[in-house]
Length: 85
Image (cartoon, rainbow, N blue to C red; front, side, top):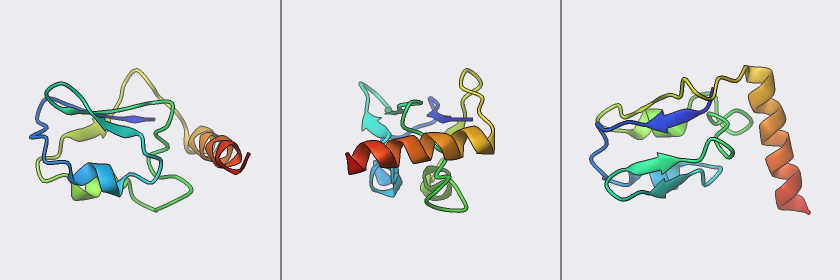
């Protein structure tokens, strides 16, 4: 399941550098996560880095983008292939 940033976000930006897929961008009021790029850090880390660093716990599972670990791994592999191309 991809993650999203909810309205608890204080726009502190610590999540930006933590995201290995560059899935997080600054929104109008809060940061946002692109579900097409979010792998919950599968392939990079054992724990989702935005969740780990967020001081207000604003990074949560996105109920509209449910994915299994296998699907997240496949997405990671597709993203890596695109970077290599």
